[in-house]
Length: 99
Image 1 (cartoon, helix red, strand yellow):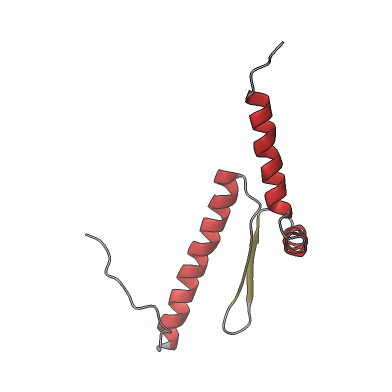
Image 2 (tube, rainbow, N blue to C red):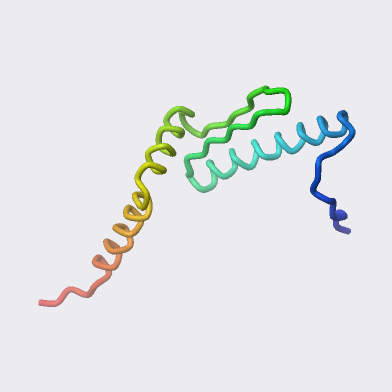
């Protein structure tokens, strides 16, 4: 039996809201850790609570993740050009050698 659907809106009861935040925050942090381990991805997650408290996860150094993000945003297409180069390298490698 599956769980029922909930309406996504702000929870009015402050106690329930805090409990939900805590559970979902922990779940999100767990998923970020799993993603970094299973897929060898560089992950950085920052969460601020409604009271301003900071929660973070980083698979490496958070500053390095933020710097990498900033550089990627400043150079549009830089990430795509790297993956495009890899695709072409694979295609060249798979071409049959002709004498």
